[in-house]
Image: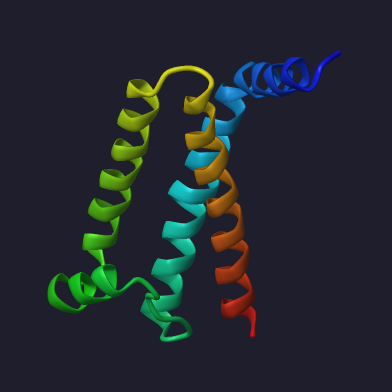
Length: 112
């Protein structure tokens, strides 16, 4: 098997698991990050690291985080729909990995 064949086989393997990746996106990035951020901000044990989100939270309060999260998820989904194969699999893979990492980081911050 050539390098190109292995490369394409790897993308095909990921493409077959896109539904699972999107589930991790929704659970990790969508719910996990949002809930741990809300808990951290409401209890004073955390702070919003994103400068745009921090400014909007300061101006409009915690509910703006839900709007930002839904907007970003919608944008990721739109990008996924617009991209062709095999590049499109990078969207849920990257967002899922980011969501799991950020949720874990937030949990560590909350527990320390």
